Structures are given as C-alpha cells and as structure tokens.
Image 1 (spheres, rainbow, N blue to C red):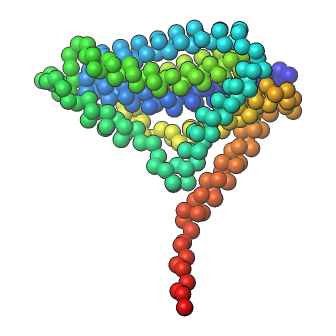
Image 2 (cartoon, rainbow, N blue to C red):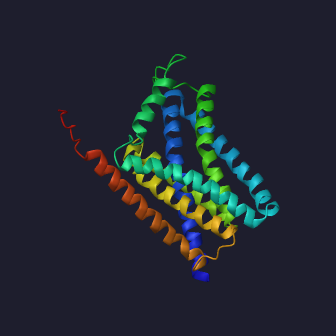
Image 3 (cartoon, one colour):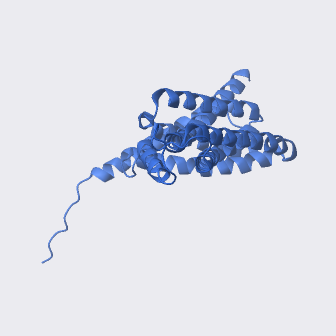
Length: 264
C-alpha cells in the first residue's frame, strides 16, 4: 500500500512538473523578449505580479474544490478534463514527431516578440531598445504572457492535486518547474530552442491521459489492480500506442505515391 501511494505521488509530481515546465519555457521566452526590448525592471515586475496572482488563485480555489465537491464526482469530472487536455497535447506531439506538424521554435517566438515590442518610444543611447525605469507596455505584456501560460498550470495543479487529494505536492512540483526553468533560462540566455519541448509535451500528454483514465475509473467505482501502481502501466500502454501512431504516420508520409494506370 505504501509503495502504491509513493508511486502515485511520484507520477503526480512528475506530470505536474513537466506540464509546468513546458508552459514556463513559453512564458520565459516572452519575459526575455520584453526585458531585451522594453527593460528588465518592467519585465520582471510583470512576471512576478503574474506569479503572485496565480499562487493566490490556487490558494483560493484549491481548498474549496477539495472540501465541497464529492470525491467520486470530482475524479470523474477531472478525469474527463485531463483526457481532453492530454489528448490534445498528445495529438500535437505525435504529429510533430511524425513530421506532419512544425515543431515549436522558441527562437522564432522570441524574434516575433522582439519585433512587436521594439516600436514605440525612443530608445536610450546606452541600451538601444530598452526603456529606462518602469514601462507600462513591458509590464503588461510580461504579466499577460506569464499569467496566460500559467493559467493552464493552475488548471493542472488544481485538477490533478484535487483528485489525488494532494494540492500541496502538485503546487510544489509546479513551483519547482518555475524555479528550474527560470534558473536555466538565466544561465543559457535565450538558447531555449535546445529544450526538447516536443518530447516533454509527449510525456505530459501521456501522463495526463493516464491520470484521466485512472480517475474516471476510480470515480466510476472501478478497482484498479495495484491501485496507484496501475498509473505507470497506463502510461506505458498509451506510450506504446503513441509510438505505433508515430511510426504509422511516418510510413504514410514517406510512402511513394503510385501514379494511376492509363485508361484504355
């Protein structure tokens, strides 16, 4: 029983950490572009304000969800939501892995953000493109970018943490992702394109659909063999299906087309 609880906690923390890391890489790209073009003070203040707002949202909604919604109902609803989100992430990751969809490029996003933010007031002679002091546009763009990307993290923390009755662990995992991505981003500047984001999204998608399946089953009264130990088995099963889908789509993409036979 202890091993099952431990395994469930590890998989929960890993899923929340990876999902949060993916979203925070995108948020960090926006903050980096704002800092380089509008000033670091406004960029960091906007990002900090967004993180405080998101933390307050988790603190306000988390206990209410846990205490006032029946656990079985909560698990079925949350399982359906996780299946929906996870299937979307998994579908896009499979298409990217098969070469049918362009991979996410943080350098392209960075360049686009810089181009959009570079206009406006005159640049300072010491640092072209950077505004002195506080900049309302920079603050607003940084806040919006971090808040919107973070909203998906909040949804994942609240849903997965509530269903597992461990919002604290889910919150810690999300906070760890913020710290890791922020620290790594500061160290490597804007070399974010090296992050294997599609692999992370594939892993997150697999974990979300696995948790969704598990909690829908539990909410419906199904007794899973080994309890939480079934989650890694679900991840492996969905992973095998995803790998088969990638291989099939790659074969179809590279298969030569046969010209039609002439009539007559």
